[in-house]
Length: 184
Image (cartoon, rainbow, N blue to C red):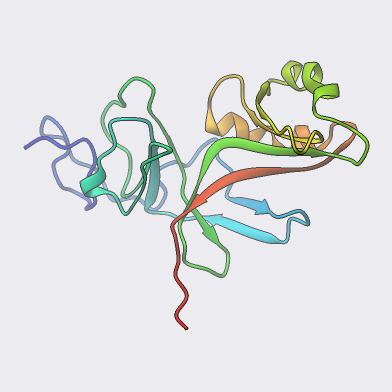
């Protein structure tokens, strides 16, 4: 049987290939941590041994977490084999003192200072490589951005550049997390 991804090291993946054990399947181009929240106090750290696959087809039977609506699956191990057209991989993160797995979507939420609007910065954002993905009619000073390249790595790398733009109050990475239930 042929598999594109494996949950266990040294299990055949495709055409007789195997994945070697690894602590971090995506060593380059992604930050080791992501700060979140308006005050950036919440820290998400990369989780070695996991990766997120973005785009169809998703290996849902082998996934640890699946975000079907977004077309993202979190898997154990390392990515192997060629990706299907339109697919990309990203690291998986978790809160520094938590266990819930989270993955970046490639979308960034930007908010400008009171009295400013996203629309007033549309050209500047596009020139910086971040065209508007979605404006918010009810919140004209905020909106969703994506890196022009479509790369999740480019989006994460651009956060500090966007934060340095005049009038920006905050930039946050959109992270999807598995649902957690509290016991009463």
